[in-house]
Length: 419
Image (cartoon, rainbow, N blue to C red; front, side, top):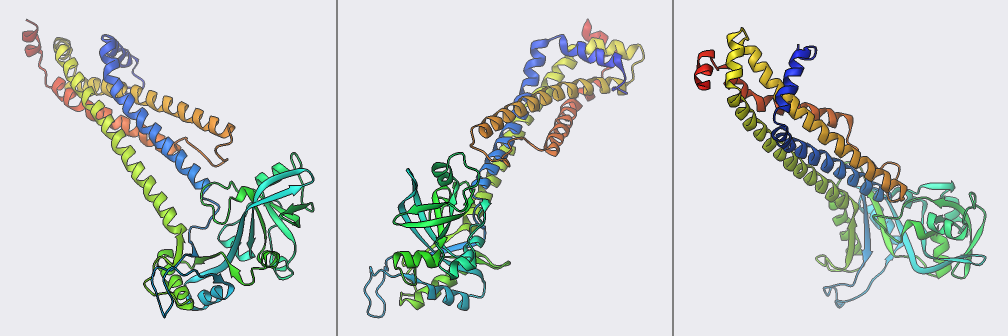
């Protein structure tokens, strides 16, 4: 076998080293194709995990409904009319749309200032209910999240974002129980939300948000039963894009809005955003494979052509081998071995360099704080193994035609060609 035949390995090395420049240029096509394929695959994987972390703070089956001015007159009411969502709308949707799982309200006020002693930081004050955690699950670093008792008793408690915690309490590990001032009111900190705040931001950036019970917010601002935004999730087996139409229909009917007025109800669908991301990365993956495999195949054609030239140049040598007893199978195995060794060396070099670059990029991004712990630019073991098998198959295919040509060379014809 070739794995244990040192003479054959020596012959392969001699054959490839006789014309180093030609061997290098032949291998470079394979090297570059594999290098680009693995680099683009790893880069796409890293970008996907990075974006997934950014969008991880929201449920993928969530929808939002807000208000806008009407665009059509209806029931004696003029167009351009403003309207507001209320807590009654939550009950209407919960009753009329059985496909909805969780439905809740959200109020936000931007441009607030959170202060502790002499330290201040810009913040967004957000009034929510515990049900909102089904839409945007908090990542509690310390303490706890808001609960039903906080809501019912209108407690002046809050959960703050990570950036607010670092700005007001630098270096402190446990700040639960401290009181901060937001606007003209004081709130007791019960938890710290460690979400990144990048990606989807509804009602404010999670890093700079002070979340309080919705009932406390309504009492603080005197907003009564009005809400800025309605948020909901849909049950398994239903599409948000279908359910949001039912939600909009219920809201239009409740507020005397024309049934065909698409402008009056603002709708946002996280399912569509996540689906768009999936389609985007599926397209990128397909494009990467097309570019990489196309480049590798062009390199394989180059290997095959060069091996044909090599066989033609070695016609006399092959004829002499046949004359002293070499079988056609041995000649074929020699040419195939040279082709496979050349492509494997080039391919594995491409994999090694691309993995090194991907690992460097990942290390730099993590050290700079850009990526989270789950971010990974490195390809999986099975991808690397599949790439190695693909390279070996390509090397074998590239050498078949030259090997068959070499196998059919006869000693007499080789001597004539030498003359």
